[in-house]
Image (spheres, each protein chain N blue to C red):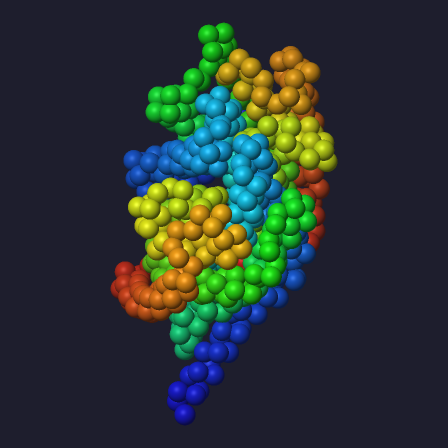
Length: 273
Length: 280
């Protein structure tokens, strides 16, 4: 009875937190432009850079797929991991903390809402790439690619939950660090070109980021051997599932630890920190 | 004038505190230079890997210079609108600044000065890195360094006024700062040919590119620092033409920014958006 009540309450929290984002997506029209046109133009810059460098044609496809995945990674970092920091700055974090729901339910709601918000952005990048730059994406392989994409999102947003525990306690130092590492993480995740081009050692370290293997796998599904894959495709789904389990477990422990630490140090309501 | 200087100095100091007081000076310095160095290295790797060894050192030098000076656009331009969002929604201080006896425009210009100073530091370090670590030639025997400094300053003024247009827009739109930042930065990165020759742009995009002062600014800086032009599209213009276009477009941006910012400020006040919160 207690379990059912808790489950219902937490599911309601997930729905409530997600719905704020879903509604916001359609409420702010200027937001939709920001979410579709601007990221498409950013991706276009890279396609043109590649053309300027006379890169092989498939690299344009790589950067379009990378651009779509970048949108989700940005959502993980800025709308998921750092969201508790913004909530703290605005004085809302304490409202979450005194509510009787799990922090992970709130984060799950953020993640689901964030995925909906970000999908318009990713679709704009993909469609723009296909229609404007004539990038080839064999749609007959879309289903396995989509499956891999869902697993990658699961792992990435689970990592976002772990990172949010850091933002829960620390403030601008983590925020500046996230800003600082944004571009290097794009590089290590293979957003610009296959990560295997940087050598096995670097690529192996980068594989701890869910986006790295996810993008590697999706490119292998679409482009086969020309994707210069890092890990055999059949191994990628089990690795992503293992990463999801690992990150969720870490998030649970880390959120509880950081919250307790924050309470002891009185930093959970400290604004402008 | 004295009053404006006071406002600029105070808001620049405030901006410095907001930007830098989360860490000791050494760590802040490390953060300030890490980003330009990281983007330089990324560009270096990208050129090497993507071009599969076909790109020459000369090509990389042009890309390097464009990318390095573009840091002013990404830092200063975007930083001003970011200040509006932060003050309005996180610190909730925009309303107090608004009712204080100062002009919002002057206050934001002061905040931009802080960003310009940190961006300058990053650019200088990146140029030194390019010169002594990557072995690039920065400047030619005939380079007039005073003219380089003048052109940089003029471009920076253009960035500042464009930033004011963006800041005015930020007063009346919801917070989607990251997308706005990233997107606008992407548009300018795309349109002004920071890291690729303008000649590869489709014809419709060339028209946009030619309407941006940054296009002429980067070309002028490249010519002064390498002794040769980069964009064939601009080969018909001599250095004097580039100076003239840059100066006229900067003046135009100034007028446009004053009109637009004033309109946005009045609209924000009329609609009650000065203390708006939109962090969903």
